[in-house]
Length: 138
Image (cartoon, rainbow, N blue to C red; front, top):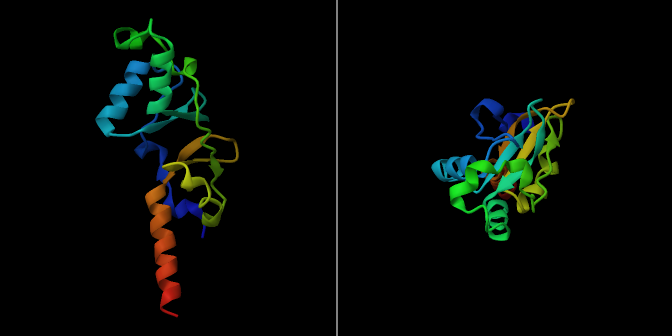
């Protein structure tokens, strides 16, 4: 099955720019209750994912920043510890199963590597469950 059916389009995805600040990321993640958010550059390309852990490690290793100065540090200055690989829109659902074992979502890009949305883990699990159920009936 083609993954486009499960796509949450970019317009419905919370994402940040690498030029956003640590404070903006923390506030957006807290408000939406997300632990990871995709980073999209000014050309619309996926450049990685920032996680709560990335922000925490940056603040821990840079005590001079502190929360009071978090508005001065851009996300492009925060090392990303997890590599969340994107997939192309023409890939099949089976290609995503191994990716979602370690990440909550899979970023989806087009042929020009422009970010077009995500596929969430829950949709993939639901797909696998329904597939398993249908096989149990046979």
